Length: 112
Image (cartoon, rainbow, N blue to C red):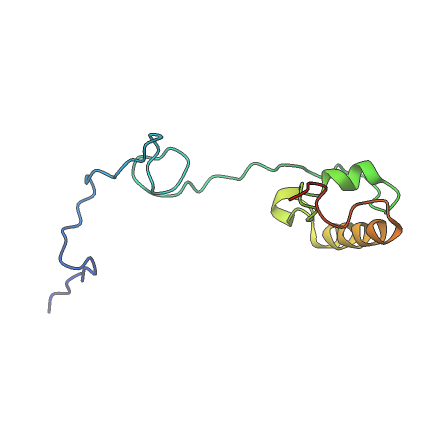
């Protein structure tokens, strides 16, 4: 018995060399990275900020804590900070204490 691959394309032919539509800015609408085949790139993400080795994470180090926050006042995720789970918990706790003491703003500094 021969097995056939079923296509769920709704009757349309699925050819790999089919042209993808382009937006006005010249970028295709099928992912980023400039790949022409419409697939997402599986490369490593570029970290925005990385915690240096030996950095003490506490509420007194305000300049360090500000680098770990977005402009809206949210803490960067572990993917962005390249921190392990323990460091990320310490970072979140230090930000909470600094906000409570008034050393860091609670929300964004921009007015709506």
